Amino acid sequence: MNILHIDSATTGAASVTRALTAKIIEKLKADNPDATVTYRDLGTEPLAHLNPVLVGAIRFPDEDKSDDMKVAAEAERKVLDEFLAADVVVIGAPMYNFTIPSNLKAWIDRLGIPRVTFRYSENGPEGLVDGRRVIVASSAGGRYQPGQPPLTFHEGLIEAFFGFIGVDDVTFVRGHGVGAYGPEQAIANAQEAIDAL
Image (cartoon, rainbow, N blue to C red; front, side, top):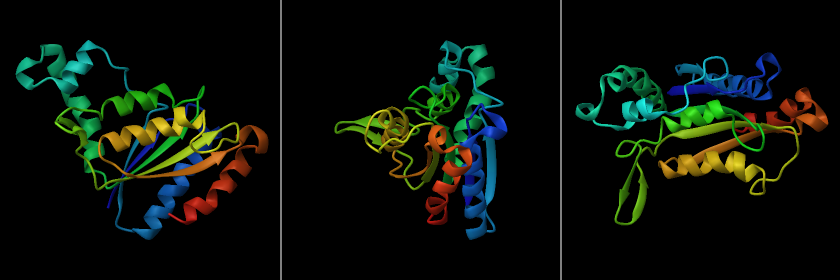
């Protein structure tokens, strides 16, 4: 089993999602001792937000790329290849201002590639990367109900994107109520969901 571990919190050791993703990885490795883990920390090493060179590097055919796009293409392809090689993707997704961190959105932007992760057909969009499992460690200061704002802007965005590219196995492990209970209790409240993975 190949596991891709993504952290995106910018709060360092105080991060609830970093604690949760570490616990999720620990559980997955205990259940699958031969699993390999690739780690990417978007909080400390963020990807650039999309610009014309990066969009061309990611989406244009090689023959249509400028020299700058060709230089950028190799690094950009690595991000996509990490995702495509994973059987399970574990994502730390804290809620920042009612949505995901912008560095996590920059990573997601690397995965939405026409004719690679999705395509348009006569019947509409079709995801091309089924067969993966995504586990999201979600944290929030408040206590919110699934399917209700602001979780629709946060978890809903993640679920909608992965569904669009063909991943329908998305599980949320929630460490919510950080503002009300404190980080330790929010993490403890998520333990049952981790144990059930």
